[in-house]
Length: 312
Ligand code: AFP
Image (cartoon, rainbow, N blue to C red; front, side):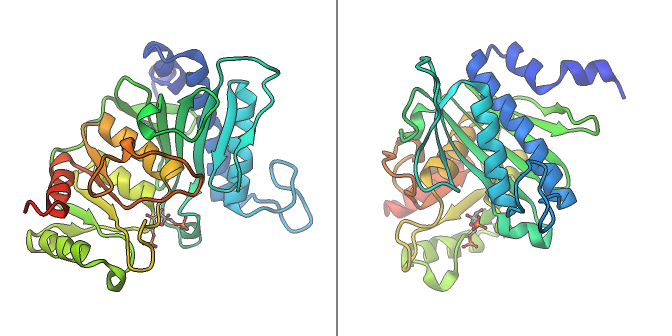
C-alpha cells in the first residue's frame, strides 16, 4: 500500500485542495467520520446488548436511531451548524452556537433504507447543506451535498461546487479518492420504477410500458442511495418514484432525500424533475414534504418531462 498516496488522496486533503470553505469542509468531513461509526455498528451489530450500552454509552438503539445520534453529535462537534432537519426527528433542531454567526443548516437522512440491513442489502446516508440558519430552502440554494453507501464497500460521494467525487473507506479507516469529477452518462439503459404497479397513475403506467418496450432493464433494490449510486457511477438511466393513487406526492422526502440527490445528479451532468419542474426549483416548506421524482441521465429525464407534457 502506498501510504503517501492514501494520505494525499484523503477526503480532508481533497476538500482543502478544492478550496471548499473551512466550515463546509468540516461538515462534509465530520459526516464522513460519523459514517465510520455507523459502518462499524452496522457490520458488527455493536448496537449495545440488552442491558448494556452501545459504542455511545446509550441503551440499545435501532441502527437508524443510532446513526441519527452519531451524525447529530458530529455535526454539533463542528461548531459550524446552527440548525438540522433529520428524517428521525419530528422538528427542526437548533444548536446553540453561542451567538456565533456564519452557521450552516443541514438536512439529512441518517440511514435511508434501514429496513434493508436485516437482509444484507445496501443502504445509505444522505445529506444536504445550506448556508445560514434556514434548513427549509429550495434545493437550488444548497452549497453542498453528499451521500454514503454502506454496501460491499463503504463509499462517500460529495459535491460542493467543483464537481462530484467518490471516496472509498480503506482498511486504515481513511476515505481515499477513487473517482474524481464524476459525470453521469447522457442516456442509459436501466430504470427504477418505484412503488407498487397497481397503484400507478395511468400516465406513469404508460411511461413505464414505453421504457420496457424500448428494452430498458429494470434495476430496483428498494434502497434510494444504492439505486442512485448505480445510475450515477455506472451506465446512467432513470430512477423514478411517482405519485400514486394512494400517495399523489409519492414517497420520497424533498429536504433530505430528493434535494441532495438532485444537487449531486445535476452537478454530475444529469437532471431531476417532479415530472414537470426541476426538483431543485421546488419550494421546500415542510420537513416531511414529498414529491414525485424522475432523476438520472439527462436524456431520460427530458423524455419523462416531454411525455408528461403530452409532447410525445
Ligand atoms: P425505508 O427507509 O422506509 O426503508 O424506505 C426506503 C425508501 O425511502 C427509499 O430508499 C427507496 O427508494 C424507497 O423507499 C423504496 O420504496 P418502495 O419499497 O415503496 O418501493
